[in-house]
Length: 144
Image (cartoon, helix red, strand yellow):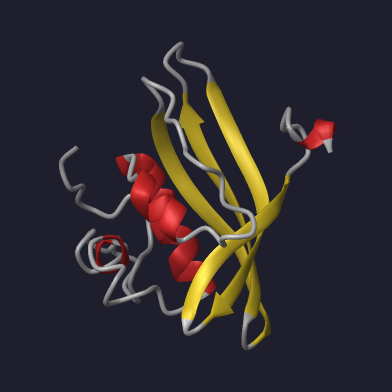
């Protein structure tokens, strides 16, 4: 997949101009070993971009080992439509939460919204996605 421009996560600068991939999530996705995301919101945004770009290795590497699945699969034909970060809260120096809505369209043309309150933990200077609570209306939320 080609590198997108602007960044899939939709982050904007002070003038409300969408940042380029290289100036935004590309810094973390392309250089995870040497440049981890500086905070939980940046990690969450880069993970959204990794879903858009189908970067399984990055997603697994940034998932906390206690909660990480063995592998991921991507639905063919899924088109990601945008990300809205609703809130970012630092709980303490090593724990944070990010609430977001990610929109997508499946191969059949149906639109979906993924709402989640995600939890992150920092270990040895790196942020990791831990887990999250799905928003109301999500089919998997009813299973919990």
